[in-house]
Every structure is written in structure tokens, then in C-alpha cells.
Length: 160
Image: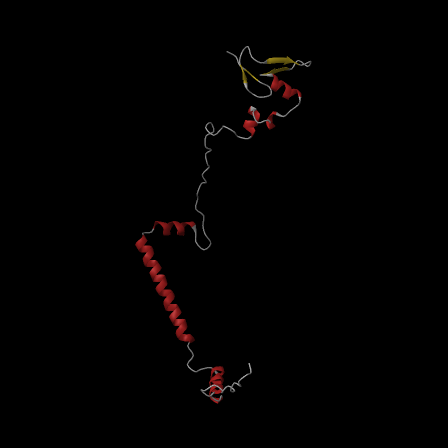
């Protein structure tokens, strides 16, 4: 059984149904019903009429079951050297056992702390600077303020 498609709506037309129209330029138009034929003659766009197949395709209606999920492309991972470390160094570090890596880290931390202590020991001044000495003298020369605050004047009755 051969079925045709309506030129306007896109519906299947079974044998014995529909209407064939042959134009003067020998184009053959097949319509399922008068409604489709009239809409075609009014030059309506089938993509903007809700019940046509073209509209449903354009607006992705009813294709959820048919459409399969698109495969996402996986990015290929590859190693690159980082500034200050070559690729061989990075791979060597990665293949080390965690215990060895931990021991190296602790040793580096210890060395950094020792350097910091050495800097702090050399930085400590033996004699206070001249600016600190001047501040100390200025503090000694200032008179001490009395412990009691100044007495307030007595309130006079009737005044606010």
C-alpha cells in the first residue's frame, strides 16, 4: 500500500483519500483535506500553524522518545611540564611512595624553620635604637594626671 504525504500538513494520505492538484507548470500538489488546500492557497506558512508536522518538528514536539542522548566528547588528558619542573620530575614525584614524599616534606619544613630562626637571631638588636630611647625620656618627663576627676559644679534648683 503506497501512502503519499500532504504538501501542507505533512500527514500521511492513504489510497482513496485526499485530493491531487496539477498546476499549469505540471507540479503535482497532494492535500489531505480542504482545510490544507485552502491554507496553501492563502499562502499560510505551515511552520506557524500548530497542528502541522512542520510546526511540530520546528518546535521539537513529541520527539523525546525517539531522540537518543547525544554522546559527550571526552577530552584527552595529557601531562605538561610546569614552570620550574620538567615532566620527568613530575612523573618521578608521582611514582614515589607516600612515605618517602612525606619524609621529604617534613625535612624541607625543618630546614625552612631553621633558616627562619637564624634570621630572627641575627635581627635582634642588642642596644635599643635612639628613637626608642627618646620616647622613653619623653614619657618620664610628662606629669602624672590626678586620679580624681575634676569636681562638677553644683546644680541649682529650678534650672534645667
